[in-house]
Length: 109
DNA sequence: GCTGTGACTTTTT
DNA sequence: TAAAAAGCCACAG
Image (cartoon, rainbow, N blue to C red; front, top):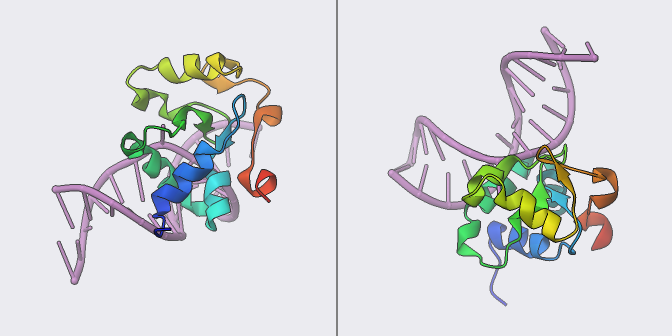
């Protein structure tokens, strides 16, 4: 197995997010080892164009707000996609966020 | 080789 | 309580 870049690590975790669930940059960053590396995660998402199977729409900020929705090409694509998976979004904010939150560090042990 | 930027998070004023 | 600033790592120019 090739050494996964920091990005691939992020992509893999994001890809493991179950449908109907959402995760946060900080959670993924923490799972990688640096909670403050959340910016890197977001930045990795910026390069998510290189990965076709990266559900970046399942990744939101700490508040459960779709911060990067604007990067999806359409400001509503992210929200609609989340709703299509069963995640209700209101005002760019994930509903039942506390229940929808998926922590890789907890689920992946 | 150095500087700037980035879809965040946390702490302090 | 709200708002602002700092911190962090990695990639691109």
